[in-house]
Figure: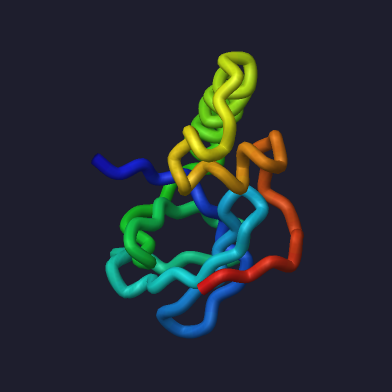
Length: 106
């Protein structure tokens, strides 16, 4: 099973976008989306491909849920090694939020 965290489109260049995923920037391929996207839109990304768009309300609701998961892990005393790799950076920051960290990982 895969887990997709809503990603905010930061910029686009043809069929490629830079997305912000909880403060970390990554490149995503847009070729599988049936509609065009623009900066500020939200998508779900899997294996480097944007698979579908997500409305802002749903994206923000999902982020609140993931934030509660991070808090629950902290309360349970789980250390980053016990947290799935995808969440270690979020756990280390202690927050889930879109940010302009300038960090870009392809």
